[in-house]
Length: 417
Ligand SMILES: Cc1cc2nc3c(=O)[nH]c(=O)nc-3n(C[C@H](O)[C@H](O)[C@H](O)COP(=O)(O)OP(=O)(O)OC[C@H]3O[C@@H](n4cnc5c(N)ncnc54)[C@H](O)[C@@H]3O)c2cc1C
Image 1 (cartoon, rainbow, N blue to C red):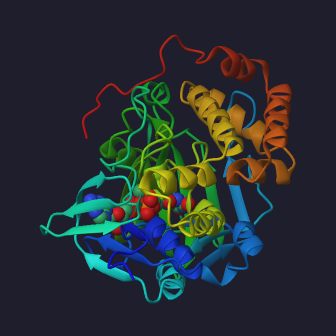
Image 2: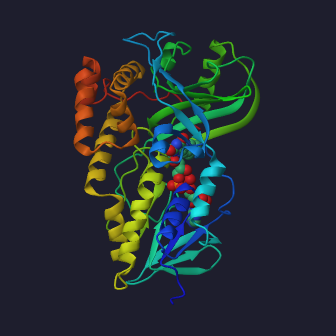
Image 3: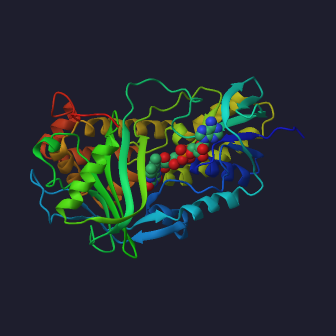
């Protein structure tokens, strides 16, 4: 038996654990390299539409679940305080520790090395990872699951990458900042902003009642390059709460979030594979990815196990079969459609965005849900996008066809942070 594993996985986040677990389940010999222990708590909170987990039989992984799920987009050009869009579908927050354990249990037997991958080199049959400890580790295939900032994965330069930025607080308040028991996906009400602020790139509130008087309140920017500075987001959250007469009385946790929304797809001819953020798997329209990991991990692992069964295949050939399984043409084309859509929305001002989302969430539930979770086949997705266009007000249609209503997308006066 060779003294190297079939696959070396780089990373210890959701993507690394998912692909290591699914490969292990397929009988592939896997080892992992991660700077922190893989049992260490993850920093981010992960949300998901509950039906995505129902389809996978994984609903018990949720720690919180809301049936009262709403957004606020107003109607027409004005924002009406009482204009609520009810989504009529449950949303949940993962129990992070349980999600991690779900994958760690499926990966029981996988060896994890506490180290940092510095360089990956590929010879014909084997790949070598040089680590910061000085160790070199070899495998037939390397899968980079070390997140979107990985230096090891090549992708085309398509200009500035837009980031979803958010500043969030888990805490207690002087009074309920949102209705008790409610989840708010997007609150685009902006009556608390000055006229000058309303001409800047729009932000929305993502919020949930976590029970026992604790709320998660996050001021979020859909996507912008460069990302909206944290101090702007923090100030806007403060203004929003001030207008509601709400003070935060206890901060339990602060979340500073920035991740790329329109990262170009990797070069799929390179001789190492990627998964998760490193493989541009974040949904360009929603910023979500965990559901995609759970759906796409098993099929990728199965395809790799079949390829690895052929002892003549070297690293480059194995990586190629992995890329084909991870990003088949259908998914590449869907991704391009989503990226096109996002590029249009990034030029929208706050009024256009609100009108766009009001139309989007007026679509039949299975259509907007399928769009947001990337579960519609390509022809159906195109049909939904055409329908959305047909239903949209004329100014939104113009924006979707011609780009921004403004010659330049709105920006912030100050952009440090
Ligand atoms: C604050 C925040 C909130 C988010 N919320 C959601 C959400 O609600 N729902 C959702 O679906 N998605 C969400 N996302 C998007 C996406 O799901 C996450 O970014 C997710 O964590 C990406 O997983 P990943 O494993 O690809 O990368 P990461 O979570 O970034 O993990 C990368 C791992 O690689 C390790 N690593 C880094 N460099 C090296 C190296 N050189 N060698 C070895 N290991 C290395 C790191 O230590 C880490 O363990 C959120 C993202 C952020 C930032």
